[in-house]
Image 1: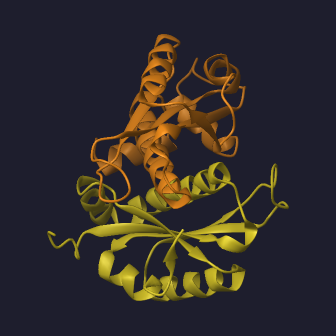
Image 2: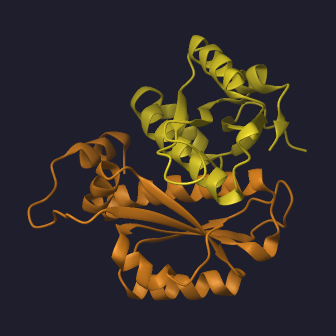
Length: 122
Length: 138
């Protein structure tokens, strides 16, 4: 396999304890994707272009609870990465204001792996 | 389009005569015949949403603006298979709706090049519902 270690990546970390449906999960992750991309364009423009040109890699991992999301968000911000916590409007499935997904990136893959290596794919 | 012009475009005031009052949404139709896992679907829909947003910044700035101000509503629906997605795309295009296909790179789960998601919009909700009203929620 070709080494893709340096290619930028985006990661979604979703709360497994909320037991969201596939559609709900997809929508929450795409909120994170759009917000992270637009925010990153302001601060990390070249990285965003590199990420998109390399196929805009995205992966979805699972976390057990809100505390894990908040801890990872803090660590990612401390490492200078773009993050976005998605709060649901609560029209369906979960109460309003519930934090559902943490988006990180686009960021160098190594920086992301350092944060989320212990998480499993959703 | 360069970054600077993209930002100018999405932050500029709406062009006169293009203002909208109705809320806009984005619909992602997922190819159910591929039997993708939940995380896989989420990533594919994420691709669709980002691509559609970028495309709308160039082709439908007024719709994009309205979509942002009405809460970036997104809905995920079930599509039968690739033919069904192609059929919907034709109908949507004929109705003047912005359409975006997502093809998978095939690193995991499914063959490379599979048509996974059709993103429609951002578009006025009523216009979208004429095309997607029959589809079930994912």
